Figure 1 (cartoon, helix red, strand yellow):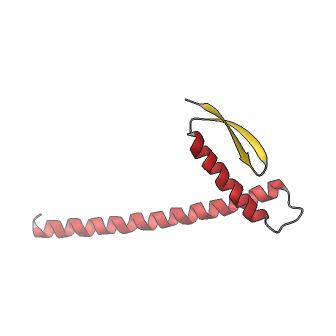
Figure 2 (cartoon, helix red, strand yellow):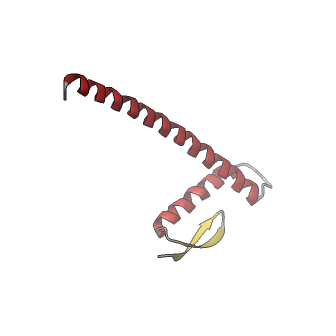
Figure 3 (cartoon, rainbow, N blue to C red):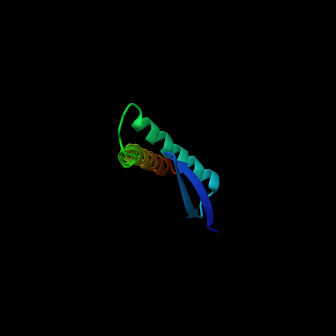
Length: 93
């Protein structure tokens, strides 16, 4: 069931309607807020939109690196599974 949630990111209040758990959404908002604060640190006169875009790029980069690592783990597990299956077939198990 959808509920209305109020979040704060970069000093802005966002009201959203979602099926997600409120605590989860607040963790996401905090994560984005922290990345925006990190990106804007030491930058004077940077617009909120620029900071948001830089934070989005940083988050997307981390996501895609993790996705690639996940793919490597999947490939390794597939190879191990095939090796185990071949060994079991060979031993009659």
